Image (cartoon, rainbow, N blue to C red; front, top):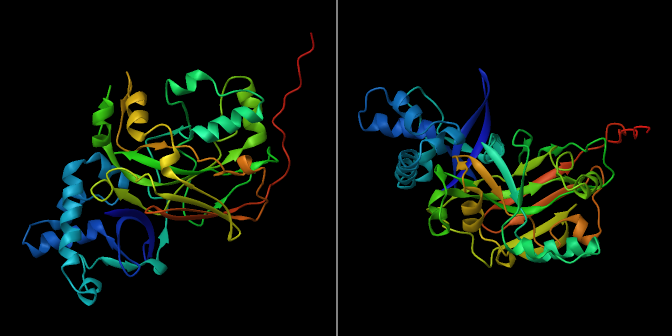
Amino acid sequence: MRLCTFEVTTLLGRFERLGAIFPNDYIMDLNAGYAWLLQKRGQPHPNRFADLLVPPDLLRFLEGGKRCLDAASEVVQAANALSLDAQLGLCGPRGETVFFQTANVRLKPALPRPSSLRDFLAFEEHAKRGAARRKEELIAEWYEVPVYYKGNHRAIYGPDDEIPWPSYTKKFDFECEVACVIGREGRNIKVEDALDHVAGYMLLNDFSARDIQRVEMMSRMGPAKGKDFATAFGPHLITTDEMREPPAEMRMIVRVNEGEWSQGRYGDRYWSFAQMISHASQEETLYPGDVFGSGTFFTGCGMDLDRWVKPGDVVELEIEHLGILRNKVGKPKGDKPLRFPRKSS
């Protein structure tokens, strides 16, 4: 399945709903659809059971585990057996709309409120070139453990959202990444068991204030303010029943203002998600809704290309199977350097 979060406007206001993407640019409201299926089977209180088994929020859905995934798969299969006209005529027990045309709703980040965010440095060539810019060689320890930083899981943006330009940076950047989402709690997970804990994969754009990131990391800390202002998630989460693991040949494309800047492939990464998950879980519990970013491929960011986006530019990332994520870069609101005067001795 391809799961998404979408916003629909009703007479009572705007609501976020969990959806499954269907062909012909339609989205099924999974909660309303499952209530329809239960009513069709004569189940008493279908909406109450639908709220338990297919909640309208992706994080709650992931926390429900296999029973929620099985229920969603069940209603998707039932709807697939119908003609398009029959699908569009479906209503929930309370008259709820079940199918929406994509053009009539607003797509939100696939997972608007992740439990946590870890972003890795999985691509060797990107890591090597970063070291070379510092006039260093990539340290041997990089090959011993998959390193990551913990990002701000509260600053999440979605498709077509404008990304704010931090007032303290002059070098705004992006990174084209694959992300995996944890679907099952685990601790001290073995590499060979790690993919059993994955719910699915999505596209991730890791925005950066490179000048501030450089200062932070020269002090052997961070990144913090260099990253924490924004991360964008793609339009849908492809579940592991459709894609157990991203294929090595999966293409990754960067465009700015519709012009192509670079291409890469997922198979060029050194560390696998199974290794990342196993490492992060050592003496630490992972939870449903935790997000792991892969880091970008070499040339998957402006820093690698020495080519920088400007206010008003549109950054478009495309990853095969994971869709397209497009965001406009906002304009700076003032100039507030993050510097403090040095204390006098």
